Image 1 (tube, chains in turn red, brown):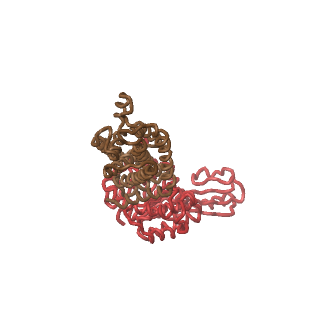
Image 2: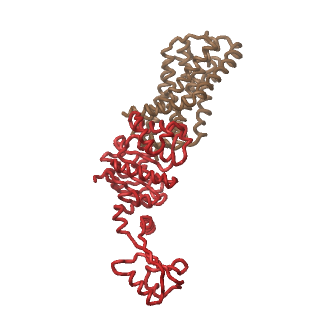
Image 3: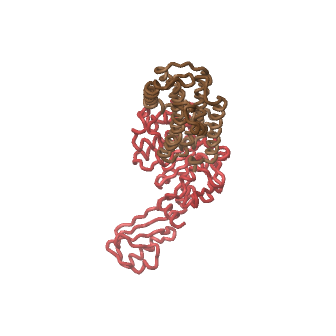
Length: 305
Length: 253
């Protein structure tokens, strides 16, 4: 896949605060790229710089080889943006609001296209209603409809499912997947790591304005994969001596469960521990092993930075 | 050029005008009627003609200018401030819309609205006084130039304002006094010498005087000076807007 967005050494300074610090990143055509990071990490600033809402202090951003500063019309034409907040003119009707968004991109009104989007987002019945009357979830969907009104090649979704219920979140996920099938490149920022795990092809982690890591999601999960095994004991333990020798083992649930983090299957480490328990006369009732999630990986990376 | 974007912004703003048509049109008409009752009938009956024009007719250009200027400023300032306030300005800023296209859309709509209001006031005045317009073409040019220029000024105020108070402070504390003291309701010949000279420092005086010339063919100052004044103010506003968009002042971070 060819690179569609190219970010080279971009920094953004607000007064003394460096919101972006020498960020370089490539977004590939047709992928879903999840940008993860804690609050204030620089996710929205980076999106704003690409979309033209703020100007980078240094560095270059190119969209399909067009510079976002010198050829802003060409770059913005390709981009649809769903912002984090719900910034809408409440007096306008749903349909007219979408029509306005489309018109800003130099396109004439296309009732068929707008109605199709409104139907997809279950907003068709509300098309003539004022935005004031919509629920929070509907406003969120309307923002997506507005971003899609000009049929963008690249879609930025800045925390699109923040504050929406589970059902709507699934609907939005489906819509994102449909857009990807249509060839749209999607850049997603989210606090819900589950969302990135579900949707993303690649994941970028940003913290304190710096990109810590960019990887294919599957490669990331496998590289940083750690298994955690829980051994439920039949009676309570108090700091057995074998625990002192092995830092991977800890006691949880008031001494009723042994927690083994990062056990290596290839070296039969679990078997050794089970043998050790038997030798010490410690009985157990259950063994449960879970893979760590993208959320665990994200937290590990951010905390160790 | 993205003409469609300018048209879209224009239509969007005009739709807002249509939604508030009662407030937008009826209020100025009622107020104008009151001006005619108070100034034209009650006070005007005590005043003899001014430069051969009855007092009731004399105040018509001043009244139109008063509304044209204040409505241009208010409409343009609100037009850009409101999307800034609710955050929906992000759409315009992230769209392929140049500063010129955005200005044409917002300022064009504000100028159109105030021109409509100005014409409504002119029609209302015909209910109270009869007058012939000596130079209708000049009158039309003056209305359009004033509407555009003060809409540009209002656009600047709307971008500059960071809260509702700032949005109204310049129109209330600066523009309205300048319009009232610029000869809307009197000829500066009626003032003492000192205040006549002070009035010459008021830029609005030149506009009202020039506009009045288009009605009656007489004014306190040459018409060319009035045209130079309005064109100069327009050039200043355009230059300020160009700087605002170039630097992203209070629009882009």
